[in-house]
Amino acid sequence: METLGRILTMGLLLLAPEVSAVTPVLDAPSDMRLGQSIYRDGLRASGEPLRATVQKGVVLTGADAACVKCHRRSGLGGSEGQNPIRPIAGRLLFKSSRTGYVQRRPMATGAVEVRPAYTRASLGRALREGVDPTGRTLDALMPRYALDDAEIDQLYAYLEGLSAAAAPGVTEREIHFSTIITPDVSSDRRSAMLDVMQGFFRDKNGGTRKETRRREVSNEEMYRAFRTWVLHVWELKGEPETWGRQLETLYRQQPVFAVIGGLGGGSWQPVHAFCEAFEVPCVFPDVDYPDVAGTGYYPLYFSRGVTLEAEVLAKHRRESGQSTKSGKIVQVYRDHPLGLSISRAFRDALRGRGGEQVIDYALPATGRLPADFLTRLQRNERPSTLVLWLDSRDLKALDFAEASPDGLEAVYVSASLSAMHSPDLPENWPNKLMMVYPFDLPATRAQRMTRLNAWLRARNIPIGDERTQANAFFAATITGDAVSHLRENFSRDYFIERIENMTQSSLSPSIYPHLSLGPGQRFASKGGYVVRFPAGASGAPVAVGDWLIAEPSSPASLAIQQDDL
Image (cartoon, rainbow, N blue to C red):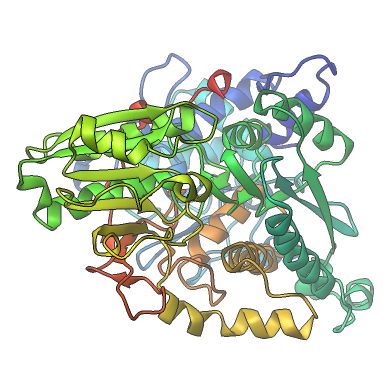
């Protein structure tokens, strides 16, 4: 039986070409849909929250009682501290643990006792009374649920199809992936990423260990799971509101198991929406404007992008004592949805934290800045602090020589928007300039990039944009590591769970110094530095303090609708 996710996907694939909205079609059997609501959300068919009791009579309700809390979305289990969580996906649960198939599946660590296959009746008894098919009492951590017969049937129907079939994009011989590039990406960054991706795929398919032949003659699971990797480059065109339709068309032509990496210069929200609707993992795209407001399971991001920088800056102001001083901050940004989202994030992060007044100065969405912009801004607003949410082209257009730093406490710029480069400043300005820097500092980054640079040289790949190549290499490498742990079980949900588990321990470098994901977390880097560019440092940034972990802003205030793009 297909999983509910696959049924939803097939429903989407049958949409007429003129339908452009990425909206799931709930054409799955009602029992499966209701079972999914119990399993994932802890909601009964009536809409009432699920109720369960654990050890010492503790009552759980709603999402806290949902099966997904322990058994994960894939149903393939894991661990809770030192306690193994058994897999409950149907092809495991409804077969005896003596069968060779079950013994080959990914299992939680720890001693596993032989048991007969579960049935509807024994599943109901386990859920209500905490007793397995042999009569053994289940662990006290396993909740005892208040479910009626119809709800047991619904959960049985859902579990029967959970992680049961290989996800779209996987055939007997191949596993298909894509990478996505939006039209606002420079040709240099595009080439830098594709060189890494294509080189990685050539390595995977090089046949140096004769995996294809071993797959044909071996009974070993690690060899039967081998597939040739196929990369599809999905290059989007036109305006963001058309990207959903383009991605649907590309996916209909060739479904992919996951999206690896990707590049976007502006909003990634249309890609995020596509991946959520089609339940396609999107593994660490290199973007400055991820969807930080919406909920999502399948996109995994390096960070909250420029929104994170706004939050880091607010925390720096508080912890350095600057927010206790009386003064006026003027933040300058382009008047479009992305610029507005940054300004809101900064304002929200500062709210209630001190006496500083924040004034927004919105520039036209497009067009060159007037040469005397800085001079007029200082004369009219008299800021004590300037925050320039501007890209490198806008910063280059500012005439710092004509303006005066007198009266300014600090000028802050974004490392992401300025491509990590300090603007050229006259002699009286550098001691005022600081940059919000969510990346690894150059001194330590150089050591971590040694492995990547050796890999590039060995494959005759030109060393180009460091951020782009490092992040693409990380996304590809962790994908490879996670796929190798899937064995024969090509479940997208299990793939996501493996990446959550492996991100912090990955040896592959990225441009970020600290990456980690917990269950349900979707942003791996959660902080940044504030740096200066002191004289005599050869243009290298020097941190003014420790790495700052930022508090996320209110999601509601950051919402960017696709219609706004």
